[in-house]
Each structure stands twice: as structure tokens, then as C-alpha cells.
Length: 209
Image (tube, rainbow, N blue to C red; front, top):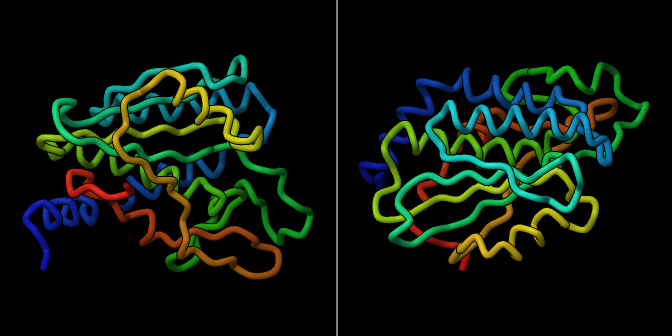
């Protein structure tokens, strides 16, 4: 049975689906290759701006990679329970097997194709958009959603370790891979289902303990 908040979230997402998927395209089109500090910093600024524009309190924090900081976003009330969603936006270089531009963010049917779209720009973008959707709805009440996109997953999760050392105060946490996304076939190795990008969470319900 859908709760009132679930219905409000679903209605909002349905009404803003093109905008949400459009931001996923922006993220996938970024050539944020592992170790490319200028590109990683550029995407980090894009993410920070989108969060702020969406009503999420956001700041840059040290990630352990000079010049490419973490982005930390918060929405809700700090007085109650909270949950941290974490994901990375650095990707490996695409192979030469692609049949089209891996940075195009191509959409075919209900799938968006692109380098890193499943590992893990799809999941990372979903958590970011979840934060903006909740902010637009004035949620969550009595709790807080914290999002942590990091630029240096391939250094062994250094950005996440740095955030933990800062004691950002999360009570529970989840990583956000797009587990139900499937490869799109030869020459199109990464595909994120558009409907997955439209899924958002209600963090006040808890979980991830």
C-alpha cells in the first residue's frame, strides 16, 4: 500500500522525469575519468550546483585527491534519524568496442547508454535526484538524508574514508549501485534503465542498518 509521501514522491518524479533523466545525461556525458582531476573537479561543481539549485544544502570537502573534492549534501532535519547514501562519479576509460560515442548519453527506449552509466553514475545520480525531490517536497520530516558523491572510488574509496574521518554523523548508510541495470550488448557496455533513474527513496523510513 502506498503511503501519502510515496504518492507525493511518485507524482513529483513522474512530472519531472525528463528533467531528472536529463541530469543523468549530463553526468554520463562528463568525461570524469579516474585520475583526471580537472574533469572530476568540473563534474563535482556541476553536482554541487544542481544540489544547491534543488534546495539541498551542499558543500565541498576534502576527498584525499587534491583539486577534486567530495560533495556533501544534506536535506531534512538534523534532529532526527538520518541515512547516508554514497556513490562515486569517477569512471574507467571506455573500451574501443563501442559502436557509438560512449560519452553521448544515448537513450534508446527506456535505457540510457554511456560510459560509467551503471558503475556507477546511474546510482549516484539517482541518490542526488532523490535529495532534490525530497527538498522540493519539504521532506523528510523528523530526519535527514545525507548524500556523498565522491571523485576517487578507484583509490580504494579514499573519499569515503575521508568523510568518515570528518565524522559527518550518519546513523546508517547505503551504497547506491544500479543493481537492476543490464549491459546493453556488444558495443554498448553500460546501460541504465530510465525508470531506475526515476526511483527515489523516502529516507525517513530508515534502513541500511
